[in-house]
Image 1 (cartoon, each protein chain N blue to C red):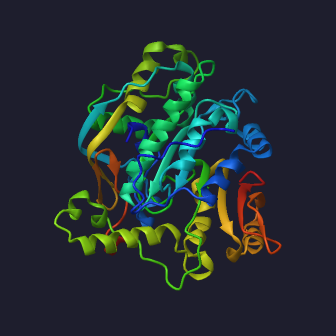
Image 2 (cartoon, one colour; image 1 turned 45 degrees about the horizontal axis):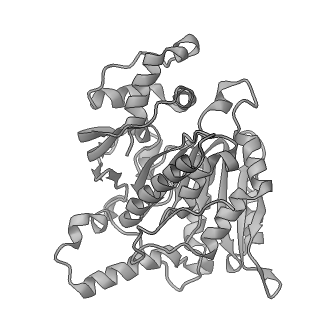
Length: 126
Length: 268
């Protein structure tokens, strides 16, 4: 799964969804793999409005990426090629192959194996 | 005729093999009227505000082989009027997730090789093992696709657990146990319980929460699902509309399979 996925997912437990701490889920023991994707400035520029910036900053930190700017790039910052390249690498080229995604509310850990995260719940959580 | 994604790598022991319903999905989304409607909604540059240029997130619940999501990913220019969409698939069967990931990336690269003039930028961000939209953040989905288990059955098969999808759990399994497990996973692809609607009703219930403000869902129904009643029910939500936008051949005066488009008719 590409890192951008973490910006669109949350805990599968219904009661957690309305709690602020269920997003973003937290990466633990993540093993990363880089998969090259053609750099397309206008694509990444159109991805940025979709991003929850605070959530992405948390994710980037947990994966050991250099700190992202405090606020989401806008206006002139969107023409800065280096900013766009950094985001392209983090969001679209970096794949999480193994590890866990952990909910900050209930603590449930969703396992990631061979790049596929498993959001099915054990019967006591359904 | 747009190419159908290659699924030759998929083993259909536990995964639904692309059939009439899958192809109705492809034909409906690529039809002139539907692609026009979607392009009007999602095309870039139609409005100066940033929100409209934002890349749409297209999600398929229950991807199976991934033939529908692969088609949409590869044909995003034709369907949505733009070369950049993000696709994500969910399925309760881990094998289906693996298959989908491969199908979608093959479909995207086949399209990229065939058309030199247009640069397709669409990216498949992940296939997740999960129940319908349960892993997704509320309000995040722009386009939701669902070809459900729609066959009426006496019983609805239970959902698999996380451990049943653990690749290591298959080791040491006897061949008869393996056969039972394969049959169980296959039953999940078609068995819909009462009126064939038990799983579809759970998805419909999730739609107002999971779709973005510009969100739209496409759901396939068979005639036993009573599409007219389903559409009436959706219109009763308030602020939502539903319309039949695709159908397969008539049988005794009835359309056997239909695809219903569900969307917000008013801004929330």
